[in-house]
Amino acid sequence: MHFNSPGSRIVIDENLMETIQHGSHNYPFHFYYENLALFDFHCIEWHWHTELEFVYVESGTVTFWIGEDRFILSEGSGVFINSKVLHRFHSPGEAVIPNFVCMPSFIAAQDSFIYQKYILPVLSSSLAYQIFQAEVRWQEEALSIIKQIMSVQDDALSGELATASLVQRLWQKLYENADISQAKDHMDDSASSQARLQLMMQYVHQNYSHDVSLDEIASHAGVSKSTALNLFRRYLHITPINYLIQYRLNEAALQLAKTEKKIITISGETGFNNVDYFCRSFKRYYHLTPTEYRKKKLSAYSD
Image (cartoon, rainbow, N blue to C red; front, side):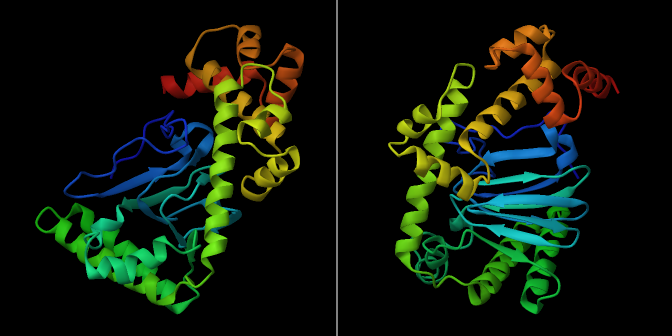
């Protein structure tokens, strides 16, 4: 099994879409065996992709932010994330989360009857995600199939064929049991809201080193300040300004770990005009001073 190396982070474009290609054109499926402890800040940050995703919590506890919701899953649980849905994962410590992503066309060709009848209705529904818990019979069966998919990845003889067959079985289980009946107008509203939120997050990512106001964040998406507040609270469970501060601290932490710049320089470059305020905010968020954090990271990289 392969783990990500220390300092891993998701690579996204200006619209928060993940830029890596998962699998290949003629086999659009990829399996990952990941430990959140090896990602920066034990976190896979906000992103989305056109692929479907299934995650299994093999060990540890993981907080998921998916669409508008936030929830915690522990060992033995799993989750499906629909195409083009914003999501984020975090764990306080070690958390092994085998996961796989695939294009919807991996299940059936896009111009096929199977795709139109059994795949498109899920993609077009307002179903952002589906949790799998062992206490529910059909979900326990889905978890069993997910684990079988994980186990056949080491099969050099017919692993791809077994994977394709099992993913179809998993999709059948999801299609037959998940609630995909919600109205299309709710789906359209959700997609529109998510697009506006992405615009505002993009603005923060591009301008965090400068003075940024709530007015500017809201106007970038063409919404009022109250709508901006509602969208951030609805999806990210945080205010726009607190999101800005957290993003600045995140970028500062990366500079502390990967450069030799002075703390006062990093403070200024990440939008903090007062180094004392930066140090207080950093310690409150990471429970370490900037100096302590840098020493800890240097020690981890040298091990």
